[in-house]
Length: 435
Image (cartoon, rainbow, N blue to C red; front, side, top):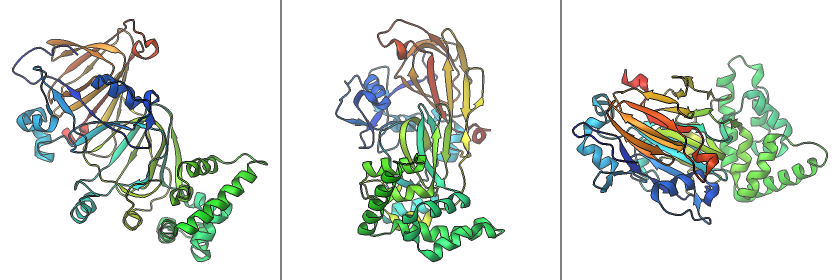
């Protein structure tokens, strides 16, 4: 991106962002994260390396660097400490001199862990007790917005679906025991179904997750044998096919069994899923942009080689049942949709700008981070300075800064991507929190 121009008032700044090479990431040029990181850093993509997450923000585990006009690179967090006006008064008063959100791109090649994120009170306790495993004291509500078809496990299935599991997966019924299984089967007979189911559901899930390794291996062996035999005479259900897929990725892992307890969700591009504290989930496959409160606290219990805290996970969950809400975005203008989860820290805008199209992002009293996923364009800042935009650009935009962005088409070797409409994603503080 060329010179932002102008002096005095704060202008948008280019960011150099951190990449995480977690083992579940997609490898090499198959990874959207790898493509973006190569564009941002100028480094070639390493085909034998997983590119899992691109981090855009101030978290210590992967902070972004501000590229100043002098060419100097400084941590965004330090730059904000020197320029707190870039956050806006309301943000500083509410969250201090720091970004309240963390923006990411995820390229998921195989399942992430069965996990949940603690609320603020639990996060503080975990950080004090185990700072090595829980690196900060903040909560971590989050939202995933699909770039491709995106698969996830999220929340516990309904009482009826759980009953179906017990009737069709005998290995699960054997694990939880006859008494608990019967209580879950009888749930529909009770008027207060949620209150009645929660206790046996918690017992069943805890019993499953604390199963010894030998019992897990035996149950998975039986499931695998039975499903492979039944696959010869009928089409397996999506959940059964998923279980076989997860077993290949994580042999003898209790997380494979736990998948039967959760909703199996497939998001289409442009659909989003938000996750509150203390709700179980696992991303399975696909590419997404993700936004969350600035935290990296994860309580894991399956489908992972990392530290597991099964006792904490089983005790912290709400055990709510039923399908999660899927956000499809609310139109802001003819090119832009806004995804506003019920969390104050963040919202995300998705803008698909056709050739020669122009869109205005009004000045708001909070900071934003813009990602140019594909395409090229030009940007006017506060009706004055003009600069170019291209795929891979990541910008920090200070509070009270208006942007006008136009899409342009230029010849490029990567015709399918670089000459496509301009794909922009903006993360910012939830507008409702800035009113």
